Every structure is written in structure tokens, then in C-alpha cells.
Image (tube, chains in turn orange, purple):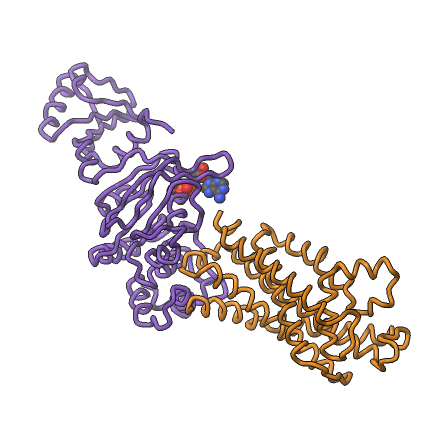
Amino acid sequence: MVGFQTLFSKEITRFLKVGFQTIGAPVLTALLYLLIFSNALRGRIEVYPGSGIDYLQFLVPGLAVMSLLQNAFANTSSSIAQSKMMGNIVFVLLPPISHLEFFLAYVLAAVVRGLIVGFVVVFASLLFVALPIENLVTILTFGFLGATMLGSLGLIAGIWAEKFDQIAAFQNFVILPMTFLSGVFYSVHDLPNFWQLVSYLNPFFYLIDGFRAGFFGVSDVEVFHSLIIVSTVTFALSFGCFLLIRAGYKLRS
Amino acid sequence: MNAISVRDVYKYFGTLCAVKGVTLDVVEGEFFGLLGPNGAGKTSLINMISGLSVVDSGSIEVNGSDVSKDYLRARRMLGVVPQELVFDPFLSVYQTLKFQSGYFGIKHNDSWIQEILGALGLDEKADSNMRSLSGGMKRRVLVAQALVHRPPVIILDEPTAGVDVDLRQGLWKFIRELNERGHTIILTTHYLEEAESLCGRIGMLKKGELVVVEKTEQLLQSSEGLTIRLLIASGDCHLPESLNSFQTKLIPGGAEIIVPNASNVEEVLAHLRVANIKYDSLQLDRRDLEDVFVSVMRSGKDG
Ligand SMILES: Nc1ncnc2c1ncn2[C@@H]1O[C@H](COP(=O)(O)OP(=O)(O)OP(=O)(O)O)[C@@H](O)[C@H]1O
Ligand SMILES: [Mg+2]
């Protein structure tokens, strides 16, 4: 237990020490998106027709989840990849830390960073726009699941990658397109059929839709439906990641 | 009980077989030396013992705990000083040891940390960042890290590579004390004098195979005798036939004659005088572990 606590707090310290980059920078990016998109698109896009929800309001939860996902991924992937390349990963491989503790320490630290970034984005946005909160539990549930999903995915990527380029490629060619095509900036009902279909195949879409429902009580898909899909994907990725750790894949070659 | 018990262990890297069917027992309290040339498989074997790499076939136990089935217990018993000079550049020396204690489940470890820092000559560096330390200092920290949880079995993979004479002596004194207090020590080194003076028993790996495991005294006995080394500046050296009863060898700038014991030296010198061999200087060497090592590595038994 002390082993887990130590590794967890080590991972937390790691990103807090450079909080300017790990929290400050992503929040600033999200706010810039908010500023630019809202000015460019306000009035041109009507979301959830008849609900009275303003585009700027609509945008905030999407941006918050996007930042949350990207940062949860970045935390585990960069930490593991860096330790592997520096060789100091041996310091956490030699001690009696169980496979489960190892997995949880890394992923939960990523969840903490993801949630911090996500919520700072929401709070900072309140300076520009008022937001309703329909159901806090829904918000927290989807936030937690999303951060766990991407924390696990980042851990898998970090374990697998042999170079930083590979992590960057994963971020640019998988995570980024998937977040952009998931309805951060629009409601999928406004999309042509083909792109609607693509969105329905994207687990991030359900994450964002569910998270947003926690604010407005309105969503493209039934919230419960989204919860099932998101939980399933999160569990599958977490379990896959745990199995890799247990097998020592690439870590104990 | 056996501190380490290795049973018919193999390790493959692709098609390369780095460890070939090694079976070895290290008894509790022993000071064991694992020797072998570069690439012999010492580190590969150690990594399997410490769980840093999976055992491809065979089994390994540390203090009776299997390194894969009962990995938590096995790892708690072990302290490992890795061969590579690795460190966390974001931490100070003290933080490094504090975190390492935590990983091993120890929350309050300050007095022991202070003791190891002192013994390894690191007290003044406690608050220095790891990045700012010299190579030798970093290696001391690696040794300290391996000891934070007072492991009953300590494995040191070339702990004295790149370390100055001062620390080397200090380090050995400290490790010896730990051994006297009951810790089992397993050591790899390329400094054979170190192994000779420290290790009670020695194993030699050659291309992944354990070709010799023997008490150090016995190994040395098997090669008792003296080497008489003649240095002849002219390089022109022909040993008389009267010396054929001894083992002789021409070396660059002279010759070596190996005799069973000291009383033979006079005899050899007499033969040299009779044959009128002029030499510029003469050295007498006790045969040592290095000679044994060289002859084992040259001998026919080959992987
Ligand atoms: N991760 C790896 N991938 C591929 N080959 C490896 C790997 N690790 C070791 N080897 C190979 O296995 C063999 C044994 O290497 P090992 O590091 O165990 O030798 P060693 O006895 O420790 O040598 P040294 O004295 O140089 O430290 C070598 O041929 C080495 O190239
Ligand atoms: Mg080695």
C-alpha cells in the first residue's frame, strides 16, 4: 500500500512541479479555442434547436473534455516513455509493487491531472459565459471515465513506444482526430449522414455527449446509452493495459 | 536455506541464447562472485533473478520465493545495483532514497538513509540534484538505493566500474560488513583481484553457460605456483632445453616460466645461468585468479 501511495504521489509531483506546462498551457489553449470559435461561429451554428443553449455555452464542456482526455493521455505516456528512455524505470520495476498497484498509481495520477485541467477549463470559462449544471454526478462520472480511458491508453502507448516520435504520432494521428471528430465543436445532428455514422463509432463522442448532458440535460444520445459504451471501452482498455503490465510486455523484456 | 536458487534457466533475445541452462545455488550468507567476459550473460542472469526480465525457461527462487509466482516476496528480499548508470534527473539524492524506501513500503527510513549516506560518503551530497553528480557519485547513489530496505540478498552488477580507489575501498569495507552481518552478496566485476579477495565462492560464465563453480581457495589451489617473468630488452630469447620440465611461454619482450613452488626458482635461475641467458629484469608473481580465469575462458569447453 505504501508502495502504491509513493508511486502515485511521485506521479502527481511529477506534473505539479511543471504545472505551468502541464496545467497552465492546456487551459490557455482551450480558452483560445473558446475565444476564436465563439467569435467566428457564434450565430451561425444553432445547437440543440429550441433549447435556448448558446453556442459559447455548448462549446465549454466539449473543450473541457478534450483537454481532460489529451492531458490524461499525455501524463501516463510521457512519464513511462521518459523513464524507459532514461533507464530509471528500473527503480519502479525492482520494488515489490503489485501489477495492479503499478497500473492504478499511473492511471489515477493521470486521472487527477485530467480532472484538474478539465475543471480549470470550466472555471476559467465562467469568466466569459454562464453555465448551468444539470447533474454534477453525470459530469464527474463521465470526466472520471474519460480520464481513466485515456490514462490507460497513454500507459499502453508509453509501454509500447520506443521513441518519443511514436507517442507524438499516436497523439497527432489517433487522439487528436478522434477528439476533433467527436462533437467538441458541433452537435452531430448537424452533420451529414456519413459523418454522423463515423461519430457513432467513436467512443469519444459518447464521452463528450454524456459529459455535456451533465451541464444542459440535453444530449444527442440517451445518457445511459453513452454511459454503457464509455464504461465498456474504459474497462476494456484498462484491462488490456493491466494484462500488458502483468505479462511484463516490453517493460521486462 | 538457499538465498538464490537457479534451476536450468534459459534466456533468449531473438535467436541469441544469452543464458543457457544455468543451474546455481547461492547459500544464505555467502559472498559469491559471478565472473565472465563481456557478453557472457551475467547481467541477463541477474535481470531474471531481480524480475527485470522474464525467465524464458527454468525457474528461479529468492529465499524460497519464486520470482514470477511469488514476485512480491522475492523482490522484497532483493537489493540490486544495476550495471547501467541510471538516475532520475528531477530528484535530489535524498529524495531518490526517500522515494525508493516508499516503493519498498517503508515510510519512515531517515536514520537508515543517513547511515547509508554516511557509509557511502554521500552525506554532503544529500541535497544535490542527481544531474549535478559525477559518474562515481551517481554509482554510489545506486548502491544506496539498493540498500534502503535492508535486503537480505544484495546483487551488485559491476558496482566499482568508474569508481575511484577511495570509494572502492570504502565500498568493499561496507559490503563486507553487510556480509558479516548476514547479508548474502552476489557480485559481478571485471576486477579479478577484487573477486579474489572478497568472494568465498566463484562462478564463471562463458557464452551463457556456467562453466565453473568453485570455492575461491580451491580455484587458486588448482593453479598454485609462481610465474617467473624474464624481461629481455633485446627481445631475443631462447629458453634452454633444460627448462622443458616446466611450463614455459614466450611473451612480448621476454618469457614466462611457471613453477610449482618457490623452491624451484633457484633451480630455474641456475639453468638460465648455465645457458648464459641474459635478462634485464625478473619478476616473480603468485599465480592468481586472473590466470585461472584466462585458462578457463581459453579451455576447450565451449558454448
Ligand atoms: N535487451 C537485449 N536485447 C538483445 N540482446 C541482448 C539484450 N540484453 C543482452 N543481450 C545480449 O545478451 C548477451 C549477454 O549480455 P549480458 O549483458 O548479459 O552480458 P554481461 O555478461 O553482463 O556482459 P558485460 O560484462 O559487458 O556487462 C550479449 O550478447 C548481449 O548482446
Ligand atoms: Mg553486464
